[in-house]
Image (cartoon, rainbow, N blue to C red):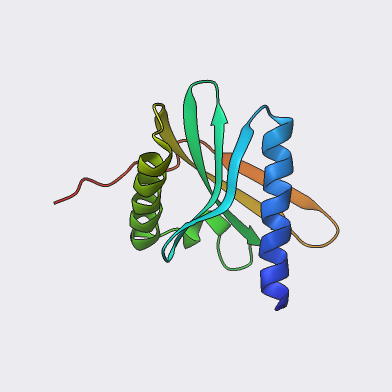
Length: 122
C-alpha cells in the first residue's frame, strides 16, 4: 500500500481514538454508499456526527481542512442522506472535521465542530 494511504489510515485511527476518549460512540468507519464514503460516523448524546478526517505530515502547503472543497462537501452530504435513510436516524446531524498532523514524532489533532452546513439544493 502507498505511504500516503498508510498515513491516512493511521490518521483515521488516531481520530477514532481521540473521539472515543472524548465520549463519542463510533457507529461506522469508512461507511460506503456506492462511490461515496463517510470517514467516521459517530453519536454523542442525541446527535449524529459525521467526521471528515484529513491527515498530513506537516502544514507546509496548507491546513489539512483546506482540502475539503464544495464538491467534497456535497458528496459528504449526499452520503449522509443515504446513511440517514438506510438506518432511519432520528437525530439531528452535525458535520465536523478532524485534522491530523503527524510527522512521525508528534501528532496534533484539531477537531472543528460544525465545520460546514449542507448546501441548499437548487
